[in-house]
Image (cartoon, each protein chain N blue to C red):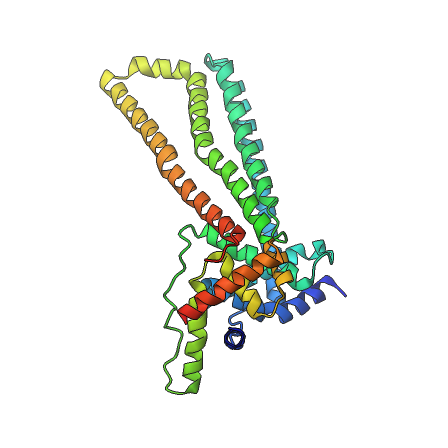
Length: 202
Length: 159
């Protein structure tokens, strides 16, 4: 079997790298990627700051003109904070996966990261949408009340059906499509870990 | 020596080895090149954190193997495009063509192995010791031995 291995080694080593950029081009690319990442993080923080300022500004202006809900206002602020903090948390978890660790450790970290990320993308996302919708509803209740009085019953019924359809679709998407994808990915990582830890000779 | 010089030295010394590892995963020259370059970008990003706790080759191979495994994770289906298979073997009725075909057959057989087995056999074929392979994968030397035995048997059946 060793002579076969030597033969494989001989064949294997004949493959040469092709289409690779020179080292200095790679370093430029690495610099660009790092700058893009920094911009992305900065954008996230700026979006949070801008959203918070916008919510507070709208509240200050609209609360003088219409009767607004304080609870709705705080829910909207909370949602904005939750969205940014979960994004940052997921990013920090991803940063903890260090490629210089052993493959087994990296796979175990990916598995843990996937669990957190998948919860946030499925159940977490649905809860977030429900709370955000409640916040918007509470905040705009006086306006919705006026609209409600001025619109025809057919139109209101139409809006309600659209809303119900959206909620049903969100539940289906969260609990079926996303979960299915999450299960497939988790199974794939678990299989790779199991194959790495399996020492039996077939 | 400056970091950039160290990087350039590592790049010239390891680019073929890492390309072969990536090609064993992808069997698509363009994708293998992308994976190789991505791996060296990670090497550059982490070059300051290298503390001589492990050998340079172990350190680079850890980055390369993890990079390939992360690629497989992103590519949810886990399947790699087969469009290049058989296309990149120029038809020539001579010894070179036969040799080229044998090389492609070997890579094809390796690509059929499980994800972690591909990494292990790639390192065996680059003459790394079982101890070094164990350090890259996070398993014992004995486990590497068992897996290599299994892989050799699979390859023998395939080729």
